[in-house]
Image (cartoon, rainbow over the protein chains, first blue to last red):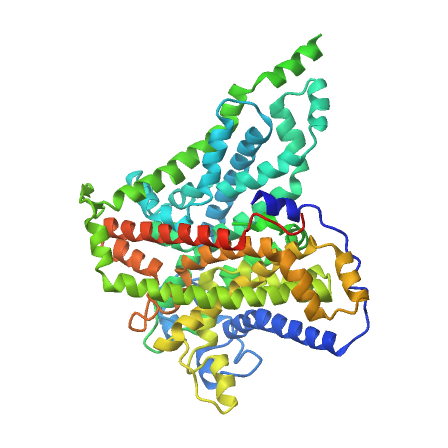
Length: 311
Length: 298
């Protein structure tokens, strides 16, 4: 993997792409294919919105039109638990009383806790591997690297047993704990970055009498802002989207995150058929924060996903 | 004087500082990665239902696994899923990456392609469940409007696995394409210039330049995505829950059912070990076959 990182390292400036502006038949076909890809990529998002703003009876009557049918926000009200059970059932809901505000908050808490701690601790470890001298360094690093080879699902069952023994089942901390301290990938990725920083920069600071702790927090970490940010956003997205692990650990509203809540919502099918309007409203609530996060950071992330992306 | 001594102290070794810096990550590594890995292997040799202590039963779980037709069936379903998923995804991702490379350098387009990856598998599964709904889904409305028969995508035994494979392609293809795109960036542009001067077609340039030079990157991406694909669970859980009639009972879903449905943690662990072995073998073989470590760029 080191090789490929090196390959992706220096991006050679390439003068083509803009070189041949003429619209040859081949290019027209290529653009058409690209347009089709964009359409397939984005249309489902519009369809979520269209469905969420429709009523269930309207959807049944007009399944195909491009615009919302009988525009309403009742789907959102149902998802957020603002409707009474009777109201919800009357409008095609299950009356199951799901409160997506609560799950939204849980998701934010878990993802933030995981991201902040994981990045900080991984960066500290990466610095220790890249710049500090200590006995056993290479052995410990080799162990961490070997950890990359263990597929995530393998540790889930034993980790569940451990979380249960710690009495943390059905708690937000229980969900966050296993990925809160490090992932081998984060350590490996940040170490690569720190290795690439010229030593002269630090040596000058050392000569000025700065301690290594200070150098790490005041110099190296700020220098690593872009890779750290990319890693943080990817970590946040991964934590936010995780389903399997929270499904194991969480049993009640107190620790239910959005992905689990969505699956519960989906499983509560009322006798009248699935509450698609409410379900799509809930889906939008679960998806929107990541879309907004991405809009804010898109340019940086898209530019940095290279071999940074290996997970 | 003080300057010289402090700089020398910095070079001598930082045992204490390193211990502080490494401690949290090492704790996490030891407790939540190393220990569970060892424990997972240990549990596979025990009978364990979470309530009473694990009891050593030797190879019982493995014997049972080898004789369990549902295990073999779920392994077969998983392999079919992985072949479909990875086959379609790799070809599409390569096409998208090359299109991005040859058509435009717009970060916007790359951003759009990445959007489905921001959704959870759960969201992707539920959205496509709705779009492909036999009665009301827009997908089937379009099929009906074309005068064809409605397709029971997720409720039919033959359609369910390919459908789930394609839903996951939708979610992951953009990310895979961007990884390949990054690999394409490393190919020197003047190689294409030279080929163009020689009158080579786009297809020929793809065959002779892009594909061979991208091979190492492609190999790593392939290993990565295959490993991810084998762990499919979320999409199955929210769309078909293993059905209809076990048609989508992928390995990870069967393992989850054994552990949390029937509380057979020992047996579930044994199957996890089997999956781990399969994944290690695939990684090894793929690595050897594609010589992932070597690059033609040299």
